[in-house]
Length: 130
Image (tube, rainbow, N blue to C red; front, side, top):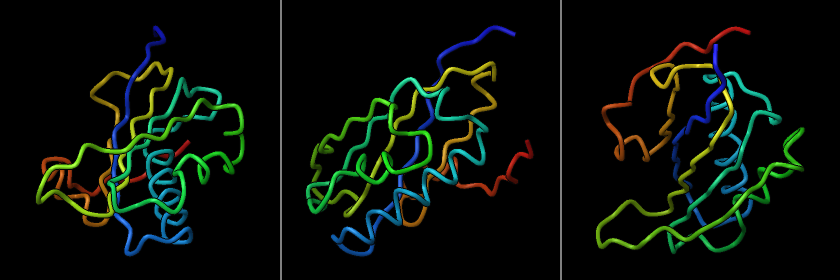
């Protein structure tokens, strides 16, 4: 099968603007995305994080960079465009990976209150075994 670059989307929310809450949320989201999509850090092309304006105590990439094998992954933090009435304390992610998997096999994860961003993807997926 041919290798292609595929994108994985996800998002989560945090209870408060603290380093501990943001670190936990980022790690939970990345754990879920990795478990459902079966890739290694070596497969990652790059990762983009966005945060809402009310999250300003840390960069989400700082938490990701501490993950095993992620020290050479290109990471970028951006501020999400503010839209009145939009979800607060939200961290969004876009991961680009090299994979042989078809687009239809990619599992996007929206956790906690972020499930409201993509209710069409709010399904329980069994974790793929390696």
